[in-house]
Length: 36
Image (cartoon, rainbow, N blue to C red; front, side):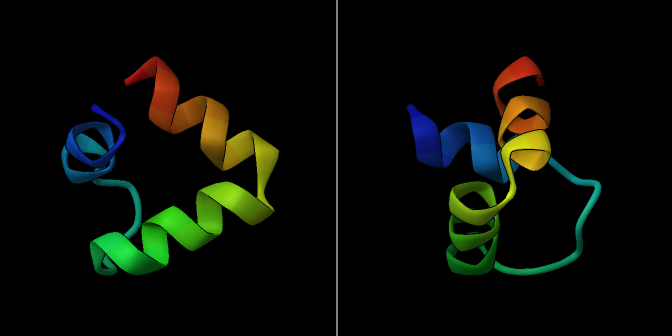
């Protein structure tokens, strides 16, 4: 489920791995991914 949410999120033009790491570091980005 989490990987599908990361794939749908398109505000950052990076790969899934980078999005996953960014979500772990940045709570605001994590909330943006979960709200998408």
